[in-house]
Length: 179
Image 1 (cartoon, rainbow, N blue to C red):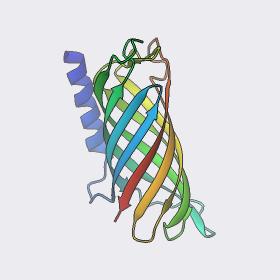
Image 2 (cartoon, rainbow, N blue to C red):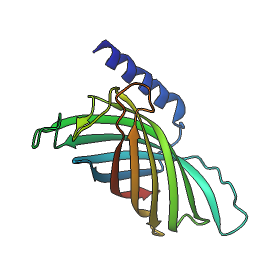
Image 3 (cartoon, helix red, strand yellow):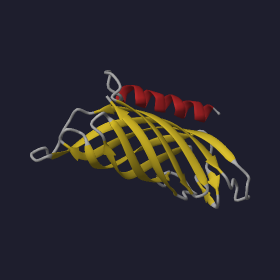
Image 4 (cartoon, one colour):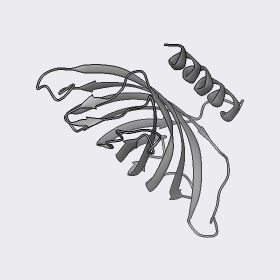
């Protein structure tokens, strides 16, 4: 319990020093599924206000994505219909290739640390640490009014911090709104 509190305090400190002090640029709602696991996620986004490779009609931008998710595993400890529920708190740096006016189609990739409130043990896959890393690739479309519909493939593992480290792969769809 003390270790969990310390890790949560460290993650909170990390979030506090990393997130810019200005207003939120976006909010998101996402659902993902894979390995007999469903994930519901809400997030807040902060743009970096930096553009790379911006000579043409597209550029590479980036944003912070802070999130809270609820996981539901449907085969806990490899027992059919035995469920496990836990929380996920995380932050990710996301890089996005997009149009100059930030509308239209985009491709993105991101990664970052996440804290799981319980050890994942589902459908024969186990994580042996509360600290995991969530990496994703995605595509989507942003309308001119700021509505963003995206699809992601996510890979969640503890980066070999400890064993077992059975990676979990899920696929998700999300709705985001940018100001």
